Image (cartoon, rainbow, N blue to C red; front, top):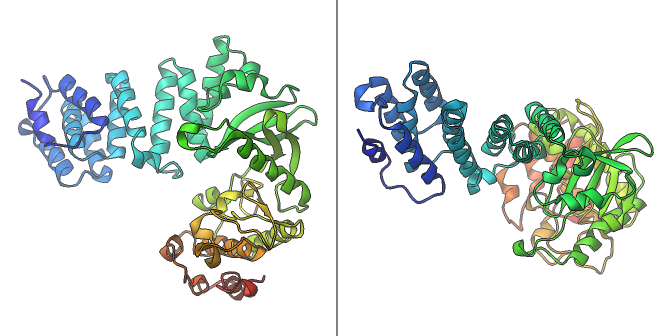
Length: 457
């Protein structure tokens, strides 16, 4: 018996990196495997994959076939179907079965191929997406296979999406302990975090020369900076360290001097702002390219929305806190320019925890003669900025805050699609939902007004 019957299931798929590993599954397991024409349950599984390869229906059938002793045939059928119509979740299910002592190396290959797909990379902010699932699967497999260094990268990828992910935290701690047991000094490797992609060991070993800060787990990473939890030995408290990464010319980064100027401009802005609802600046180290900020343990407002910890009932409370934060920023002569849930931190991992405005990397002084371009995120941009040529002002910050509050008011429903279109005539005020406590319906309409002068709290 050959693998030809399995390849015939696949048709003529487009060439993607995943196919090589899928072909290996077919070649390795076809001989001696039960065929669909020999088992009705396997035939139904194959038909289901051809008709609609949905994880909702296919995964229970895969588990049932495995339980009945027909796993090899099921894996071959699944691999053939995935060659024709790749599905990240089903591909990870295939990898998971292979990792379960059948062929771990091949399972790792498939999981890595899934993570390399652009659609999977695009899901890197979804708690329930294949990016998180794939990295968690690989982290645990590599740790069990004796490669804690590689495993650490995948656990950190999960923690960059969900800082409180229990399995990723356990895996991260186990990987660090395994590295230390091999004689990799924790104090030299910043508890293993030198393995984070984009930071090299030598750089971290000497980056905090005073030995004041002990780095902990990564909290998040942007294009130009990475944020860690850290322990300040001088005052005995945990802080957040935000460190500028080296620019990468291959991806079109700006020169290092420009990035450094913008990075430390954030510190200058924060130093002028005084508010309990703006993240506090604690230390600045230009030589080592980092700033220390107060640690907000609840992640950001985007994560709180995903977890269902905030919603319409929080509009008055968070609205007042954002009002106070922006009043302090504007009183200090600055404009934030990027008010959005990802840049609003939550001080505690509980309902009702206060928020703090953060990430002033795009902030500028409120200069009436300056035109600010390419600032902010489309969904939260005021109409005058969508049209181009207008300068960012306190009024445009207030509009962005209004969209944040609108997002809370709609939760758990998504915001209307109109906000994601480049519509210069956007009437965001008309999107205000019913049911908010007074006076917030009118306040929200004011903040979302197309007229900057009408945007008041």
